[in-house]
Length: 171
Image (cartoon, rainbow, N blue to C red):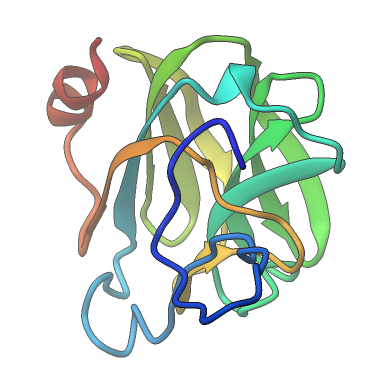
Protein backbone atom coordinates (compact mmCIF):
# COMPACT_ATOMS: atom_id res chain seq x y z
CA UNK A 1 0.00 0.00 0.00
CA UNK A 2 1.38 3.39 -1.01
CA UNK A 3 1.61 6.57 1.00
CA UNK A 4 -1.27 8.23 -0.87
CA UNK A 5 -4.44 7.22 -2.67
CA UNK A 6 -4.31 6.59 -6.41
CA UNK A 7 -6.96 6.30 -9.08
CA UNK A 8 -9.31 3.32 -8.87
CA UNK A 9 -8.00 -0.01 -10.18
CA UNK A 10 -10.75 -2.54 -10.77
CA UNK A 11 -9.66 -6.04 -9.69
CA UNK A 12 -11.37 -9.28 -8.77
CA UNK A 13 -9.20 -11.38 -6.47
CA UNK A 14 -5.63 -10.59 -7.52
CA UNK A 15 -3.75 -7.46 -6.48
CA UNK A 16 -2.33 -5.39 -9.33
CA UNK A 17 0.20 -2.60 -9.55
CA UNK A 18 -0.99 0.63 -11.06
CA UNK A 19 1.12 1.85 -13.98
CA UNK A 20 2.60 5.34 -13.90
CA UNK A 21 0.34 8.19 -14.91
CA UNK A 22 0.94 9.79 -18.24
CA UNK A 23 -0.85 12.13 -20.58
CA UNK A 24 -0.60 13.47 -24.07
CA UNK A 25 -2.54 15.72 -26.38
CA UNK A 26 -1.70 15.51 -30.05
CA UNK A 27 -2.49 17.97 -32.84
CA UNK A 28 -2.47 21.07 -30.62
CA UNK A 29 -1.40 23.17 -33.63
CA UNK A 30 -3.73 21.49 -36.10
CA UNK A 31 -6.67 21.94 -33.71
CA UNK A 32 -5.90 25.62 -33.04
CA UNK A 33 -4.72 25.32 -29.42
CA UNK A 34 -1.63 27.22 -30.57
CA UNK A 35 -1.11 29.12 -33.82
CA UNK A 36 1.59 29.88 -36.38
CA UNK A 37 2.46 32.97 -34.33
CA UNK A 38 3.40 30.71 -31.41
CA UNK A 39 1.72 30.27 -28.09
CA UNK A 40 2.05 30.38 -24.32
CA UNK A 41 2.31 27.43 -21.94
CA UNK A 42 1.72 27.82 -18.18
CA UNK A 43 2.30 25.19 -15.48
CA UNK A 44 1.97 25.48 -11.70
CA UNK A 45 3.76 22.77 -9.70
CA UNK A 46 3.70 22.15 -5.97
CA UNK A 47 5.39 19.56 -3.76
CA UNK A 48 7.50 17.88 -6.44
CA UNK A 49 10.80 18.30 -4.59
CA UNK A 50 9.76 15.71 -2.03
CA UNK A 51 9.00 13.13 -4.73
CA UNK A 52 11.56 10.31 -4.80
CA UNK A 53 12.85 9.94 -8.32
CA UNK A 54 15.22 7.19 -9.37
CA UNK A 55 15.31 8.06 -13.05
CA UNK A 56 17.38 10.77 -14.70
CA UNK A 57 14.49 13.15 -15.12
CA UNK A 58 10.74 13.35 -15.45
CA UNK A 59 8.77 16.02 -17.11
CA UNK A 60 6.17 17.54 -19.34
CA UNK A 61 6.70 19.11 -22.73
CA UNK A 62 5.30 20.96 -25.69
CA UNK A 63 6.99 19.59 -28.80
CA UNK A 64 6.77 19.03 -32.53
CA UNK A 65 6.95 15.23 -32.14
CA UNK A 66 5.37 12.91 -29.60
CA UNK A 67 8.82 11.76 -28.47
CA UNK A 68 9.68 15.36 -27.64
CA UNK A 69 13.25 14.99 -28.88
CA UNK A 70 13.44 17.07 -32.07
CA UNK A 71 12.12 20.51 -31.05
CA UNK A 72 10.58 21.08 -27.63
CA UNK A 73 10.12 23.23 -24.57
CA UNK A 74 10.30 20.97 -21.54
CA UNK A 75 9.97 21.22 -17.77
CA UNK A 76 11.79 18.45 -15.95
CA UNK A 77 12.17 17.41 -12.35
CA UNK A 78 15.68 16.07 -11.97
CA UNK A 79 16.65 13.28 -9.59
CA UNK A 80 18.44 15.97 -7.54
CA UNK A 81 15.04 17.52 -6.76
CA UNK A 82 15.57 20.56 -8.95
CA UNK A 83 13.15 21.85 -11.57
CA UNK A 84 14.87 22.33 -14.92
CA UNK A 85 13.46 24.11 -17.94
CA UNK A 86 15.04 23.32 -21.29
CA UNK A 87 14.61 24.07 -24.96
CA UNK A 88 15.43 21.46 -27.56
CA UNK A 89 16.25 22.52 -31.11
CA UNK A 90 17.09 19.86 -33.71
CA UNK A 91 17.67 17.37 -30.90
CA UNK A 92 20.17 19.59 -29.05
CA UNK A 93 19.11 20.48 -25.49
CA UNK A 94 19.93 23.80 -23.79
CA UNK A 95 19.19 24.45 -20.12
CA UNK A 96 17.27 27.71 -19.68
CA UNK A 97 16.68 27.65 -15.92
CA UNK A 98 17.17 25.42 -12.90
CA UNK A 99 15.68 26.08 -9.48
CA UNK A 100 14.89 24.20 -6.30
CA UNK A 101 11.55 25.32 -4.96
CA UNK A 102 8.48 23.65 -3.53
CA UNK A 103 6.02 25.77 -5.47
CA UNK A 104 6.81 27.05 -8.94
CA UNK A 105 4.71 28.83 -11.55
CA UNK A 106 6.24 28.69 -15.00
CA UNK A 107 5.13 30.36 -18.24
CA UNK A 108 6.91 29.92 -21.55
CA UNK A 109 5.83 32.03 -24.50
CA UNK A 110 7.21 31.67 -27.99
CA UNK A 111 6.52 33.53 -31.20
CA UNK A 112 8.04 31.20 -33.79
CA UNK A 113 11.57 32.61 -33.56
CA UNK A 114 12.22 33.26 -29.85
CA UNK A 115 11.00 32.12 -26.44
CA UNK A 116 10.65 34.00 -23.15
CA UNK A 117 10.53 32.30 -19.77
CA UNK A 118 8.76 33.50 -16.62
CA UNK A 119 9.22 31.82 -13.23
CA UNK A 120 7.47 32.89 -10.02
CA UNK A 121 6.77 36.43 -11.19
CA UNK A 122 10.17 37.11 -12.79
CA UNK A 123 11.12 37.10 -16.46
CA UNK A 124 14.23 34.94 -16.24
CA UNK A 125 14.94 34.44 -19.97
CA UNK A 126 14.24 36.87 -22.78
CA UNK A 127 14.32 36.20 -26.52
CA UNK A 128 16.21 32.93 -26.58
CA UNK A 129 16.38 31.49 -30.10
CA UNK A 130 13.55 29.06 -30.75
CA UNK A 131 12.73 28.79 -34.45
CA UNK A 132 9.87 26.29 -34.33
CA UNK A 133 6.32 27.40 -35.09
CA UNK A 134 4.39 24.14 -35.39
CA UNK A 135 4.31 22.50 -31.98
CA UNK A 136 1.88 19.58 -32.21
CA UNK A 137 2.13 17.69 -28.92
CA UNK A 138 1.68 18.28 -25.20
CA UNK A 139 2.46 15.51 -22.74
CA UNK A 140 5.10 13.39 -21.11
CA UNK A 141 8.16 12.06 -22.90
CA UNK A 142 9.05 8.40 -23.31
CA UNK A 143 9.53 6.69 -19.95
CA UNK A 144 9.36 9.97 -18.04
CA UNK A 145 6.42 10.29 -15.69
CA UNK A 146 4.53 13.56 -15.36
CA UNK A 147 4.94 15.74 -12.36
CA UNK A 148 2.97 14.21 -9.54
CA UNK A 149 1.65 17.49 -8.25
CA UNK A 150 0.56 19.60 -11.20
CA UNK A 151 -1.78 22.19 -9.69
CA UNK A 152 -2.80 23.71 -13.01
CA UNK A 153 -1.73 23.85 -16.62
CA UNK A 154 -2.91 26.08 -19.47
CA UNK A 155 -2.03 26.38 -23.13
CA UNK A 156 -2.83 29.65 -24.91
CA UNK A 157 -3.10 29.89 -28.72
CA UNK A 158 -0.99 33.08 -28.91
CA UNK A 159 1.96 34.64 -27.09
CA UNK A 160 0.64 36.50 -24.01
CA UNK A 161 1.98 39.88 -22.90
CA UNK A 162 4.85 40.17 -20.44
CA UNK A 163 2.62 42.02 -17.97
CA UNK A 164 0.02 39.24 -18.08
CA UNK A 165 2.64 36.50 -17.58
CA UNK A 166 4.38 38.35 -14.74
CA UNK A 167 1.02 38.54 -12.98
CA UNK A 168 0.07 34.93 -13.81
CA UNK A 169 3.32 33.49 -12.44
CA UNK A 170 3.54 35.58 -9.28
CA UNK A 171 3.20 33.45 -6.16
